[in-house]
Amino acid sequence: MPTPGTSFRESAVSNNLTTIAALEKSLLAGQVCGTSLRLKFEDFSIAVRTNSGQLRNELVHYYRPFVQQGEPFTEQRPDDSVSVVDGDAPVVGIPLQDVPLDPGKTRRKEAVADLADGRVVLKVRTGMLFLMGPSSAVAVGPALRNTNQIINFIDSRYLRWRLDRGGVLLHAAGVRGPGGGVVIAGLSNRGKSTLALRLVGAGLDFISNDRVVAQKSSDGLIMYGLPKQPRVNPGTIVTNPILRSLIPESRRNALSELSPDELWRLEDKYDVDIEACFGEGKRVLSSPLRCVVVLSWKRGEGPPRLNRVNLASRSDLLAALMKSVGVMVGGSINPDVRRPRPQAYLAALDGCPAYELGGGADFDWACENVMSLMNTPKTIPGGGQP
Image (cartoon, rainbow, N blue to C red):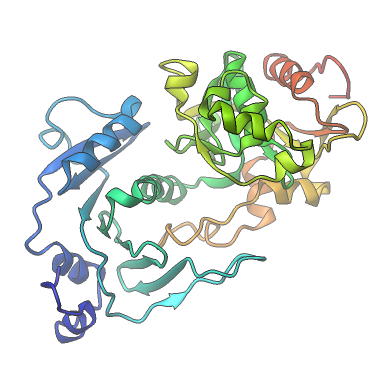
């Protein structure tokens, strides 16, 4: 990194740092990232190096089901590597373009630059700088104060690797039972995370809270989750007895005074430690994909219904499954991952049964029927037609 008082802009211009490789060399100069760990996400391995022992310990705890034991760098070469330098936010000296804001948003979040060998992303609010090359990546800035961004960065490397191998990103939660896995998508504010965690509490395994990759293989259609612990709203927590202790009692009492609509509109995020809440071994990353369920139900709309649908003729439900990869995945060789296309999703899910969970919201009913659906997909006890 430049010495204190030196602008990264001056350093970048004077040294003609116009590639990820050159920027990486400059940012890591003089830094000792001697603390390391190695993670294994299914058939993908990634080495993480950092100058912060505290950050390493936090990552080891967060990723504990996926940490490889022993000396991490004496075995087979990893598929990817990430270096994290905890320190001051660097001053970026290359032209960056603001990422367009989502509808309704007003504060800048990210700025990017695509170089010949990768992408640069600046998190505007935190000052974290991320470099993404083809087989290595670097994060520099106040990492200990922004551990969640480092986790998302590591996860994005795995996501990129999956997408480069033909996967399609679904905006969905995922759970796994003995009969296979189910993807749970939903129109806005329909409770996919709530239903997924209810199913985990009923005995299923947790795969993902918000993003799932569907990928065809010689063994059929497989879904892969990202190794990300769920972050959920208060409505998900206070309606689940297993999770209620995540919110202090005084806060729970205040929430109990809200109407159901007010409660479900709250956007305060809480982290759910799957192992601590549901037991060791409950967080997994893959499963044969048995079926897709899309939530369209609403509170107060009568009894719930579960019906087989054809996604090709239900563009509204298909749209709920589609998700952009975001700015942290750059340079992918798969042309379908940059901008979601309906045809790519229909092709990826071809042959996979899809169901609409409509009518009124009833999570107890949904748990019972989704679990039956996973085990016996030709029969839907309690309503609907296969």
